[in-house]
Image (cartoon, rainbow, N blue to C red; front, top):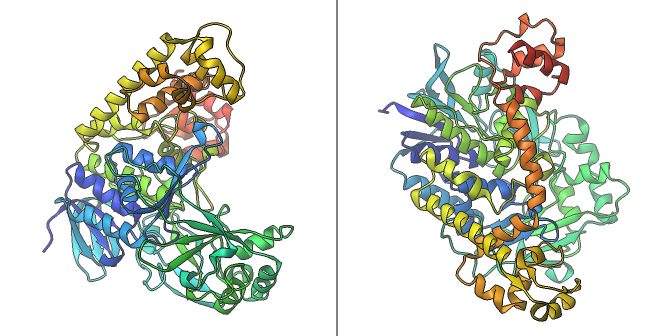
Length: 620
């Protein structure tokens, strides 16, 4: 009935979709197994993509040749660039998505890839022969063979939904959980754990009074995620902000004794940076209000997502508390919020390719690795799909360094440090964030994506053009000078010191008060100079000029760190013979099996003296 596939992907969430699309685009035959064909790329939580650090990840996925940025651009209903008041390393794109159209667009992309087949079923077991993953057995008892398997099970592994004192099996509301896989993997020697996440109630937007809320419109000139020719938004829908109050908190507290989180019925740890509303009012008792973001779910629906009100309290308590929020006095609830517990596998059991140490050609991606968020899942799926394809074709691993991408930071953190709570990306996790900006993801990654057969020829040519233009612009801005007569008036209007003699435009642009747009408005010389260049290239040149000293400093740090990254450790290195290693360091090194001295230095519990001993032992 089934051919032997190159890659089987289990689960069709954000990780599974990117994994299937990547492997198939690169030439592998792919079978995507999902429990429900109607929930492919379902946005289980809020209908949004991007945000602080997460937006950088979406742009990196796009730059490599992935699909999340394209899907987001085609289905967004609002776009905002966050943190524009800060430096460009902090600028983060975010969009509000149409939940239904997002899933439809993803399914269309996958169905239009001739190398992707689909099967609606549940994978119950992995076929393992001679230490290699060779396919899956489904709940229907069907054996499907493959050369590699990528598990992207999300919250479905032994998922348990909690609402007040009620709990029932499920991977998502209205969908059953997946059983069998965890138990098999544990018998194979894998360590498993439990985590928890949650979601807020959904309400009828027609029942809300928006006059009592603060409007949050999109950007006046919306940008987009993808570096391809997707169209920016011509119209947008607003989001809204309101706040809880003491009355809301008092109502919520009446349900605390029935809260599965406080009663101990939930064993798994939840995301620290996205707590439930009951957790917030318990942990931050000194605060008399918390922000609530009121987010529309699409163009043609009245359903509204109540961001900031994630809860697992009894539904009657949720409803009573909601109606105390300004603007929600007459709110009608579509469904209550809930918490969900699920199995995950500590990611220290993975290589930097996301292949497991224990079973060759078996890859884990997404929430199964202890992460939270669509973007974190999608980038793992992309990397797992790429490396599954490369494994079955005997090609070298594809790994991104911490200095090359937020994706590299995320995977490096997971495999070296592990996580005991849902891992979420932040800009603070990236030590080279001045290099890892959202504006230059294409310059950093598209040629790499092209080399592995994922990014198209058109994409790489566009990047090369951007590089050429950026260099030309910097050259012209450095060589062209403005006179005091031409520019002093606008400079004084901006509030910066006038010049006394001719000055290079590049030198003026390094002043923090001055932007390239202000110079374009003030000076015909600058306007004429840059008339033929793309906006992206002009912005890139401005950032490079303004922040060149910071960029240079980080590049020197990268160079220093790369010396350690280039010191390889053989796969079967026997740490037991290195008697000078600390006991903890030896155990952590044996468990994580780092491939380089640089990776070893980032493992929690491995001390600098352990690294010195290792370097001496391998002759460095």
